Figure 1: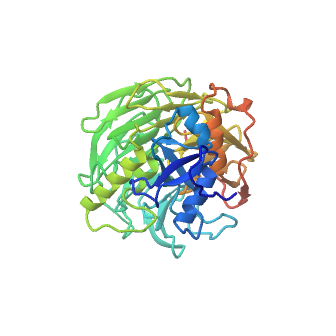
Figure 2: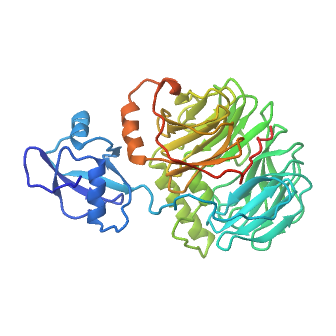
Figure 3: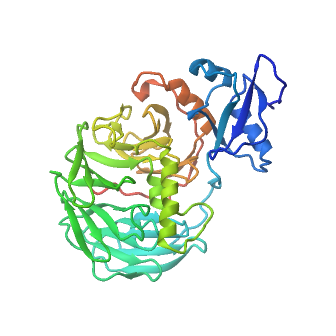
Length: 478
């Protein structure tokens, strides 16, 4: 359906298209009131002369337009006597190539691969294995760069610093090792202090402290510890949980979130390690935490352009700009997944009470993950399903059923269009998210009361491709 630019009539609205910075796209134009996001998307692509059509979201007074213009104007009682500004925002300025085959098999480890992590600039991959080694791989050539030897037990966790200068790995023996990704050599001896195995690692965001030198680790021993890689020691021990700490996140506002088998989430300040707030509500273990800003916190100042930075100060400035843009003048959101089959959406800076209780899974929720744009949450469960939720309201959107075994982990593509899920059934499934359909669906359900997701027949918004017998994920170590 093509949109026609018409002259003034009672059924037309004088509109001005503008980018997020406020720069106008052409002159004001009269648009028919029945125009919707799809027609506006076509119009913007034409006006920008985009050879490859890109998806856009549209906003009027910071409210997303997901219905025809006429419906929006009536609902929000917007005056059309003045020029109506419609802000367009690209959903991704890049596209992830379609996944239809295994592009490379990178061999080298002699035991199961237990953890993997991409570098912030996307040029390298680090992997930790049951063979006690960490390997660093060049993704351009798909060849090994370094084999990092130093651990004495399985490597369970691995994390890059947001500036890409350091790599930390944690083992089943409770030790941590910091590596130089440029040489594959360790920075001195391993860091010891935890009494049981490491369950999570998270770095301090680069926009808070550049160059990166602090990270936090969580452990089965019930503690989380903040480490300084220059001082080569633990500087703060976060003690307070009564059972194992299963997950940890260092938030963009400078606080640390820890989830535990004691059913609580604790929030800590990072200068003295004082407990700020405790979030309660789950009836069983907290298995996973996800932040709405997690993607920009992990990648720091790096984006799809591949730009490199000459100084920590420049990197810190760009990372702060990316973080503030990601937050959209809203508080950082947190999602927790639990053994009690439920999830909670929190705004910890606003309240200690959950914003939404998210129900629908029939077994424990093993992993939760925000999309890179912060608009969606995906959850993986032992009920063999992956579910999709609104990242702002916490309401159920869709369910993807295809696995025949428990789903252990999920991951998003950087453009927020693809979900990858790994299962006990030894398959990976790639699910394509139809953004236009989901936004319309989200508008429909926005005012619905919270109900269990299994009562809403909203399945099937996906296409899945299978990569069988190439990945056999292990269940998490609890």
